Length: 317
Image (cartoon, rainbow, N blue to C red; front, side, top):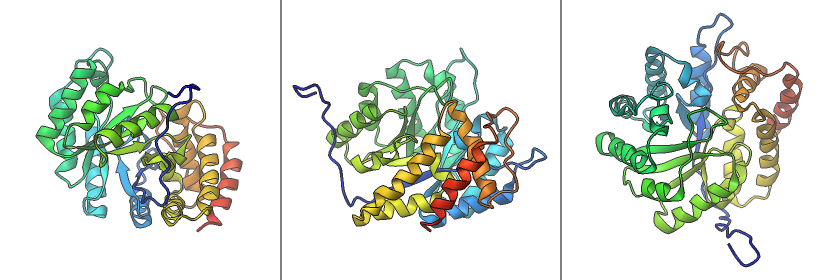
């Protein structure tokens, strides 16, 4: 902090090439089945836009899927992307459970064996570890599986989410196989702190913003792994190109995308997935706005707002 009590920020980085990863919505059919055609079309749509598909994340309802469906998502994605994807390595456990190292390694290996990069998804077991043990658990993934991405997730998304202190984050960056970490606290300051630490310790490490309420964090050097980008992968990719070109139109498109984020990621935050399903239906990407029965639903009045935002976004493409 300086003498006026204002935090030092990392520098704004104009004309920087942005790496974008987009958490893919898993669309459902009215009968409760998975809309695999819509899923595959969206993985392809996202890849063709220039973003890296991220599957079996919160946006893909990974917490609600059985093992067979998780594997099918991986198989279909690997085929469509030639292995250029990331995916959540998720362990389904319960409050009070001990960390299941073997289950986490199996989940990570299932991704890496298909050519993808595992994202170490939070769990009750990981959340119950000390910060030193948490770092060691991630180091074990790197030693056994190879390259991976870490994941800090706030409890507004899931009750077992966890955001660690800067000492643990520094130790995570020092794991050579860890190529980056998604930060989803929905707060700017901790992400700015991580960017400054990254610049000091390991400049090639990706700080992947998961702040759907502040997607302009890319201006300060974050890359991203966002659920919001599944609503509009082509528009996000265009925004990124505008930044790399130094085009001030970046700010206008970013403002519109941020309006979408502020609306859809309002409390209760998990309801954003139903907004995404409504968006898919409105854009003709899915036949309906069905979600799993356990998922949070939004009121039907969201449709009018979403339709207006979509109309304005499509003027950019």
